[in-house]
Length: 119
Image (cartoon, one colour):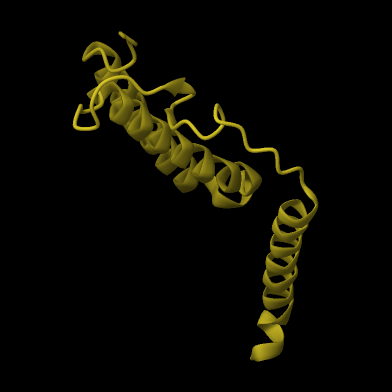
């Protein structure tokens, strides 16, 4: 039974080894010229203003949740598309129901203004 999973474990081991090697090499060989400007904390690419207790707008969280929802859609669509012929009509109907639910979600978010970015 272990021999069936050996390629998967081997791939995971090689991927971990490559990740550790790349991280180690960039840390050891990369330039280290820290300046005062680089040490300043920033948030979303801009300097922080105000106190730390200021809460972020809900738009940040709505955008993140919508991204996750539609990213999951892509995760389900690729395997479905590769097995489209073998799934038959049942698979087609189930995927259309899934896409309809996602479409209703998108329309709901759009009507609620979750896609409008206000600063």
